[in-house]
Amino acid sequence: MPIKQPTCAECACMREYCCDYGICTREFNAAFGHELYGHEIPIDVATWALNWTADHMRDMQSVACDDFWNRRELEK
Ligand code: SF4
Image 1 (cartoon, rainbow, N blue to C red):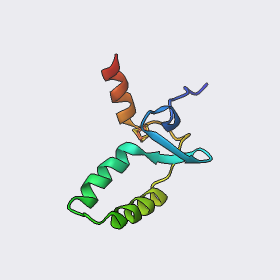
Image 2: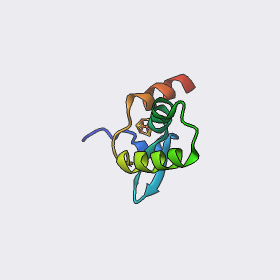
Image 3: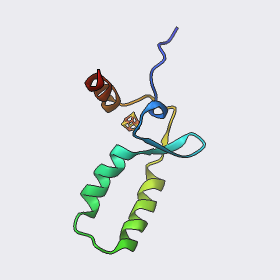
Image 4: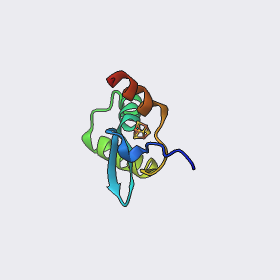
């Protein structure tokens, strides 16, 4: 019998958008800081966020990443 693993849906970093798909807010924050540093025009930020989100939707039933496990260890 296969071992059931935690999924992104069980992670506090997941933000659901629609039908079990969402984005990893850790990935979003890392990309935001990396790609928008120095930008000051809000519409650029909104457009960037919309495009980034559409390109990075995750299936919330996919297996949790190593960050999930590492944070669980720190919380013990
Ligand atoms: S399990 Fe990993 S990839 Fe999935 S939402 Fe959490 S931090 Fe992001």
